[in-house]
Image (cartoon, rainbow over all chains, first blue to last red; front, side):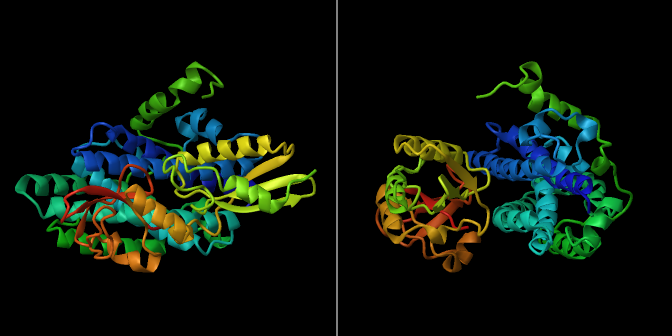
Length: 251
Length: 162
């Protein structure tokens, strides 16, 4: 992989956690219970910390003098490389839980593979972040079980959440040219291989939660190459406001 | 004149953790290495959790004491590998945590069950009872979980393992 490919690859990883962290922070002060409010803001903090490391390294790899703050606050929507699933609105708590379970299961599998990356930074990053990712997955899984196998109301909301989010999951496993060259260089994982383990985990947990696993079908794609839903623009308007209104403002 | 490395460690060992002021950043295991590279001092630090907001405060504190030592050239390097683990918290610091009201982290191997919320090894820092239960895996800071003692009924923080 040349540096510009690696830069793009790092943006994909970094933007996923940056945007998901920003989304989760919306629960701050609005969680359904104090413990959950605190849990999700803890997740958000971990994701933002990981995004900082990834985007800092992306900036160094690009070599154009952009640091992590410039990459986060001064790019417009088409320059973001996250998967669409992370930019969807928070929805109700069931939707947030479904997304966390789908994403964090996938993310842990990706990090597991990155432990053996030929890229030293990604190896070190994965060893650090996977410890946090495991806590996140456990939290989401507990809630899928509790809500799925809970009351009629919580069960139907949990089912609806998985039904709604399912068409956004294929993109997580999309192998385009960049992903293929990452595999060829030993930098990143073959997402097709991860998919089997991911599907099994979904099946096992949804079954235990008395939920129906939605059928695989058509999937929304484009985020990895900068084609986003309308929702990303609203996140950026919120997240980037200060730097746009007061360029170079510092704490 | 260059201060001795041991003396620098000693001064760094007096910097309090910004969130848990009873232990120092050296006891926490965040300062990984201190060495002279020619006339430049290199202090290597490692984050506890990647997003821990206290890291910035710790770096500022290190900068301040190095300035007080009149060390003109220094860099603070962030190292990720090997990743920070609660096993690096010294035994003395664990006891200080307990006295402060925070249940100290178990060694990681013993913590597997607590990740599932089923550990029987986390003692209440107030009454010592092992009859405790997890309220939430996520607590007041990134590094803590929230527990409750079933005997004295007090809630308490547990410094969770990573």
